[in-house]
Image 1 (cartoon, rainbow, N blue to C red):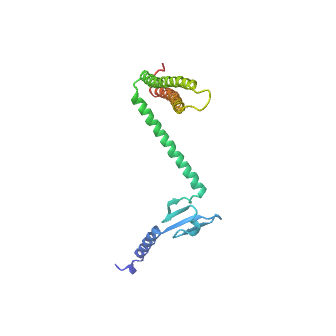
Image 2 (cartoon, rainbow, N blue to C red; image 1 turned 120 degrees about the vertical axis):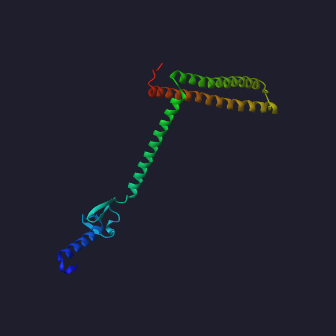
Image 3 (cartoon, helix red, strand yellow; image 1 turned 90 degrees about the horizontal axis):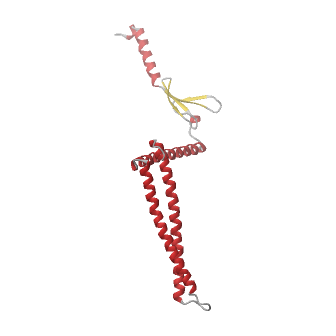
Amino acid sequence: MNLMRAPWLLGFLLLLTTSAAHAQTRSFCCTDTNGRRSCGDSLPQVCYDRAYSEITGGRVVREVEAPLTPEQRARKDAELRAQRERLAKEAEARRRDQVLLESYSSVGELDRRRDRDIGNLEGELRAARAREADLLVQQAKLEKSKPAKGSFPKMLADNIAVNTSELEAIRTVISSKQRDIEQLRVRFDADRERYIQLTGSPAR
């Protein structure tokens, strides 16, 4: 067919070509500090530190946010850290709840475990206090053995030093056991309260 004899067809093909070219046209636009819109087939320099739009065929296909300032980046990083910490704490709380439910079948079983564990520590504490009492008796005897005048015999001085060292050590053990017992009571009280919340068991 001779296109020169069908001008309408030539115009139609030209329109299709123009439309296709327009559809493929891509530009980048942003608003500068003065409120003017700047566009280009590549990102204009004025848009480097601003939010901009990518436009293809006259349609916005992508919106890009402005780069964060150092202060905004620091704030965002802090928010992300706080969010991660919160999620980690929530996950740990769920894990503890699961362990609690799997460890005990009733409040009574939890109470028995508490009494047994605390009883074991209290037995160790009684043994430590008994040893302290023995050392205090030895200390009193050593004090009576001190000569009224002159220097101590070497053996006596050594025995006094050993006794003093053992007393300090056993008192450290006693303090530690007392802390352990208190911490165990607090932990079991919290576990008991949480177990009742999770299971709806009556508090006895």
